[in-house]
Length: 310
Ligand SMILES: [Zn+2]
Image (cartoon, rainbow, N blue to C red; front, side):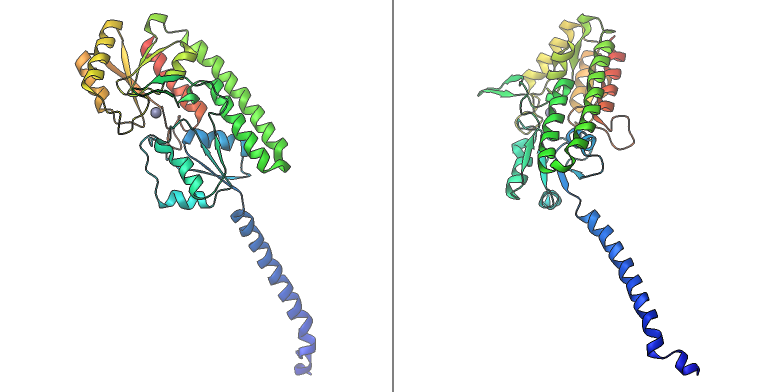
C-alpha cells in the first residue's frame, strides 16, 4: 500500500508543480537581471554634464561619467575603461569647443560609432584670442542661462531616442529649468553685496569668462583658456597678473579644485594677498560634498567669492 502511495503516477503532478514553480522563480530573477542589464546607457564627458543628464532621465537610463570629480578635462587621457564604457553606450554627450582636450570624447564616440550630443550647440560663444586665431571659450556652463541650453540640448537628444517617455523627460526638465532660473536670480542678488570695483576674479585658468560676463566680474588668470600642454604659466603672464593684482587692488585670489594650486600660492605670496578659497571650475565635487551637483557647485562658488571680495 505504501509503495502504491508514492508511485510515479502519484508523484507526477507534484514534480510538475515544483518544476513550474522553479521555472517561474528563475524566469522572474532572470527578467530582473536582464532588465537591469538592458537599461539604456548614456556616457557623459564631464561631471556637470552627467548631473544635467541625471536631472532629466532620473533612474530610467544608466548615466556613466568619464571624468571623476576633481579631474581636469583639458589634460585627461582616456583609458581602456572609457572605451569599454562607450561600447555600451546608446548615447554620448560632450561639452564641445575642445574642453575635452584634443576632442577625446568625440574621438571615443567616433571610434565606437556611437551618436554624440554637443552641449554648447546654440550657445553664443565668448571668443578668446589665441596667437593663431580666436577660439571659442568652452566654459559656457558658468552662465546659468547657458546651462539651461545644455539641459535642453540633452533633453532633445534623449527624447528623440526614447519618444515613449518624452513627457517624463520634459516634466523633469521643466522643474530643473525653474531651479536654474532661481539660481541665476540668487547669484545676482548675492553678487550685489560686492562693490563693483572689487568684482575682480583671479583664478588659475580662464574658466570664469562666462561667469564674469553674466554677473559683472572682470575675470583674469595667469593661464589661458586651457590647462593643456601648450599653456604653461609664462614669466610674462605671471608678471602681468602680479601687476594687475597690485594695480587693481585685488583683495583675494582663488585656486581651483581640479588644478594644482602651486602657481597661485606663489602669486599670493609675491603680492602679499590671501587665497580666498577653492572654486569648482571644470569639475564638480565628490559625492557627499556641497559641490556634488551643478547647483551646489555654483552656490558654493558664489558664497566663497562673496565672502572674500565683499
Ligand atoms: Zn578649463
